[in-house]
Image 1 (cartoon, rainbow, N blue to C red):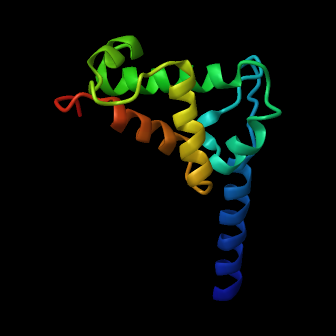
Image 2 (spheres, rainbow, N blue to C red; image 1 turned 30 degrees about the horizontal axis):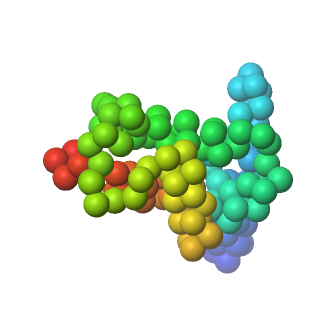
Length: 126
């Protein structure tokens, strides 16, 4: 009996992990995927064949995360970013997410945004 319960729990965990890697297109969301529920490996696979503007969607999502953390727009954060860092543009911001995901395929996509935030944030902002 105990073994059966353990097996059932293991199967539930495996199914949940697999489901999290699928792009969930929730009803009423206009076909917008739940980017927070996928891993970097899934992001990396769909990026080349993804919809037009997929990088834009990821950057918009990142801007929301950054605003939630800092109360500042991405433009305000970029203006205060360390001067010795890269020249942040649309391409360098999204390339950072792409590069993080290529190096960390098992990480959840939000980890790539958190890593980007760590590179952007002024020292005084949590």
